[in-house]
Image 1 (cartoon, helix red, strand yellow):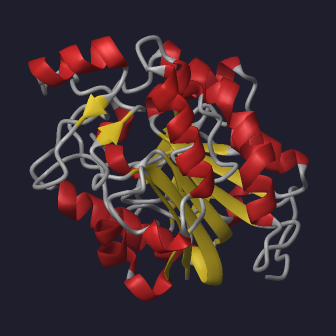
Image 2: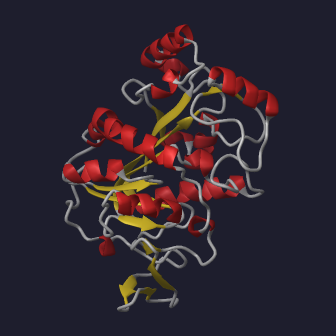
Image 3: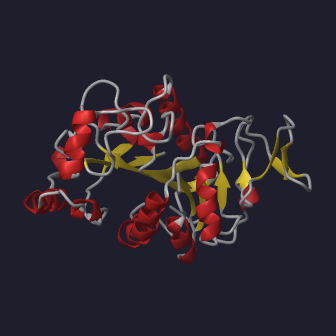
Length: 317
């Protein structure tokens, strides 16, 4: 992949109206799209809010201080030990235009910028306070919906979305599914394919629904309760979950359906994890050691199966 831009490319050249995809232009006090006259402004923390009025991304409080701390502490490691090599890989390059769809506190965006890439973060309004606290520049981060992205067609060379898909289509941003959750996830996939140029790549990661153990998410949230699973999680630090029916975690079969199996390439898990979740009190250390070994040495033929604890894929556009 040849470089199409550099880290100095301005955010305005990438933006489009999330409602009709027409060009956006500044009107002095905010931004307006040229075709439909839709208007947008900046939120309380100074970042553009390019979302449909009343969109859940403007109201849901889905990020806790604990979650933000985990993102900050792990984000630099994930970038340096995995994402940087992925950007430079066989189809990669330097000076790429990068989208972090569901960027959290923005550490990976900042690291990619240091490496000379034009990286942009997209997330919910609840995260903007953490952007400001970390000193993230307002021309590198946007509040918006991943199902109605405020970017032009083919705007990015690559995109990644890490630990995001399992929360799309939920009512609180956690795990309770909305009635249209399947449609929302299909829309997210279509938006990723739209904003990444042909020949570009998408990296997606999240726990695998087909694997019955999840150490990253608890079994309950504000609306969904699972008393027995909650007791197991409190004792052992592991969420034992269903692998059938409607559940918030995606599977490889889901990813194949959203993006097209011919585009999807399962990746090895080595180097992606820091294994901090295995250090949680209650997790038996023999089991933790076995999990580390399995993640690092899993045969390629088993990556799409229920023996893989994680969905980690590259999607070629």
